[in-house]
Image (cartoon, rainbow, N blue to C red; front, side):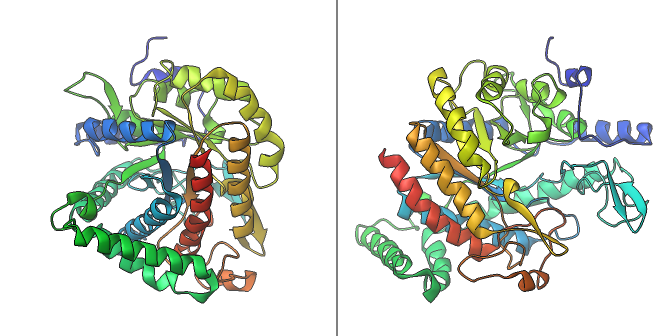
Length: 448
C-alpha cells in the first residue's frame, strides 16, 4: 500500500480511545494541522547523526523521564529539575563510563499511556480506563473518563512550553559544566555511596582545573556551557501524530513534528497494524519496545519495515523483559539477530518488566532494575552486540515510588510522596545512583 499520512486508518489498531463527538474531533485535528511544528526536521537530522555514533559504539543513549506527563503537575520547576537530573546522569556516564551521551527525554509529549484493560472497576463501578491526560482525566468519575478531543490542544501547548524551557536551559547557562559539577557535590558526599564517588568528584575537579589552566573555559568554549537534549514519546494516539506530521521544505521528506524520536509500545508493535505502518513513513528515529514473548524473527520483520535501508541511527530496539525473563529469552534472540547484519541500537528498559504490588501501591525494586540492566549488558557483550542505551521512567523530584537504593526506601515509606498517575518512577537519588552503576558497565562494553 502507498504510504500517506492517513493510510494507517486502513490497518487494525489497538489502544485507541472512542470519541463520542466526531465533529469536535475533526475541528481539533484541523486546528492542530495549522499550528506550528513542535520540533524541526534539522533537529531530527542532528539527532540521527548522534545516534549513528551509538550504532558505531562511540556513544551511549540515555533516554528517560516521566511515566506520563500531567496537566496538573506541569511547571517550570519540574522541567528544570528533570533537566538537571539528565545533565547529572550524563556527566557521570561521560566521566566514569568514558562515553559521550545522547540525551533524549520522555518529555514534551509523553501524555498517552497504553492500558492492559479498557475498563477500570472501583467499588463495583466500571469506567473507561485512564489513558493519559491527552485523552481523558485521572479522576474516577464518568465525566473525567470520557475521551475529550480538546485535550490534544492542551497537550500541544504544554509540549510547546516545555520545549521552550528545555531549549532555554540548554543554551542559557544552566548546562554549564562547572554548574553541573557543583550540583553533583551534595550527592557525591553521601557516605552511603562509597569512596569511588569521591574519587570521581576529584577527577572532575582536576579535569576542569586543567582545562581552565589551558585557557579553555565555559566563557570561551560553547561546548562547555551548552548542550542538546531531544524529546520523545510513545506515538500511541495516531490522530494527534498524523496532525503534526509535516513535509520538510528543505528535503521534501515527511517528519512527525510532535517529537524528535517516537517509539512503538510492546502492545502495539504488530507488523500488520497501524502504529508500525504509520511510523514506517516518517523520517524520525524510531524505537520499539520488545517484551519477553518476542522472537528474533519479530525484530527482523520490524527492522525490514521500519528501517528497510538499514540506516544507522534510525531504529532503536528497547528490551523490556524483567529481571528473570531477560536471562532466559534474550541470549537466543541476540544470537540469531547477530547473523543478520542489521544496524540497530539496542537499549534496555529495566522498568516495565519489574512492576510489583506492595499493599495498595504499584512499585519496583531497585535491585531488580539493576539486575535487568546488568543482565542486558552481560548478554549483549557475550554475543558481540553493543549495549547502547538505557530507557528509564524517572523524575527529578524526591518521590517515593520505587523500593530500595542506597537510601533504603521501604514499603512503609512509599506513602510519603507517591505521586505518579501511572507507573512508579525512580527519584533523583535513585536515578543518579543507577547512572554510577551503569557507567562501569558502559566502560566495559566500550572496551570489548
